[in-house]
Length: 414
Image (cartoon, rainbow, N blue to C red; front, side):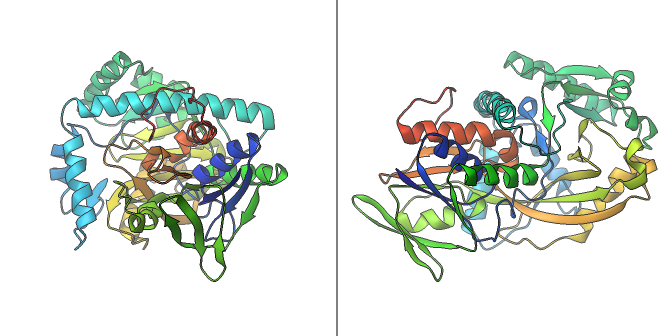
């Protein structure tokens, strides 16, 4: 079949890869000049199958109340005259009810583990390079009360089949010696030894190159402005200044912009942008003092990943519509925390400050599968887990397009 994949972030490119592997004639469209230049550009770098859980959980509600009015809060709500924002927020709170969190965790854990296996297999077959480190992820605490809560949570997650190892302070410092210099004393942590890290943008760019070798056609600077449809299905996608492109099937991988394209078709999906921030340091001569194990900082809700000679720190979630303006206060809070945790890196230059829109569903479970029109498929709504879920989502999407049952238990769209 001729298939048009709309959006060339990590989700769109992995979808194109697996569709091309099935022998389809794939065209990959993006409004930017090259793949991976939006949400996949500068994320936290973690492939966190062991931490694949939604933000929405009972314990987060009192924290949200505590964070109200704080510009540096990990989760910040900026009220707008936008019903979609309020609707998403109310649905998020509903997902915090007991029982909902556990159901979402099970769905995400299965897809995340499958995705990690797909990535391993792809890396083994292609030799793709993206500053990968397979050292696990250490989720550490600098507060004893947080450590006790994290330890209890790890036990609950093990009951759901998610492997998490509780580590003492001494064990945390043995796993990542760079934390020994921290001005904030580490109390303990939880290790997910099978997790990984790597540069999602570099992966997306390299996989797009491999896609081209398989015959995938990339059309950059091609903004999708709408879709023509009738009772028989989608008749084509309208491109700004380029007319209409027709295919046998269409896969929507437009991240936060997916609901804007789908709404005129009468398809309303619960996806809303959560703005996240990242800061990238050039390690230079301080590289030996920098962490290598990917880290989650429980106190500040930021993630830290080593990407070759760079260090990426990312986090926070801002419910502020489609505004991508960089907030200096939120970036500087991340910079200050990294320098507090790793004093030897105080002289390292910040080479990039970035803000991007994560396409989040209230329960953080993505939407993958068939839409209401024949030949229309969705692969969107991955929230903070796009890099983690990318390969599994792309492979499952290709299975669904081919009419095969995916090799993972997940609530796919039918």
